Length: 372
Image (cartoon, rainbow, N blue to C red; front, side, top):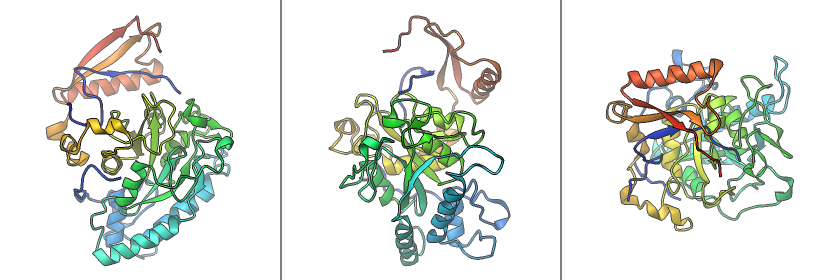
């Protein structure tokens, strides 16, 4: 059996443009990271989990000099959601509509985490302690409905958390609410009857992509520290790309499908969406794991799983040197698969950077490719 990495292992990794459509694997606490906010002040916009933990410790302070609490942090995110999610933007842009609903229990979750922090004298064995997370609306939670973006699913209330959500809670995350999505995750535009139209925060006249559109737009708009998506063939990666995020689509079986309403049982997987690689790895640690309710996870028993995906942040050991990366130059009738114009220039610059870092890059031509 192959090791359960967060991507499918193959001799050559192809960069493809695709179609639309608990318990953690590790008990290892996350290594400390320096805060990224300069000047000793905690700033909500672009904050990371490391910043939050630094502010909870008192290494960073709020603008008024006060020390951050989890309850205060959750209230800050809720106020930001109320200010920008459903209202026209101050520059005249459209409402973002990334968040479908705020979990009314999120404040109580934060208070409970503050009590645990005081008891443990820190984050304890909770590497995601007080990480407000927005779940795509196809993730089940025991304390709030999930509707897959459809009015036809109103009233759907699971009795238990999805396996990955249970892992997030165990790691200390706050389930802040549910994010909008394409209805039943069936397309890639960010539209559903419940969502109306999700907007891209960087330019609300542009697409947020999908189907994890609400998560992508919400994390880009700093409505939460992290979020979850589900991916049939691009629904984590595409919104992460256009919203400037880190999105991970793991190999099937790394994260259980239990409690995630699928578009395709054969292809769907959940995954994290964050603003930094470190936060994505922390979330993946919490979301991944063996779950008998999803037989695909049994292909990767605990002894084949990494102790922690955080270990792969070691650039010297797991960098690009010697990696084989394929860049698709032709995909069926599409002879511009690597992008054109400004997009093509950005892709070319990224490919060149990978070469500089030691990757072996190959041009790939698939003229007979047919989507099935």
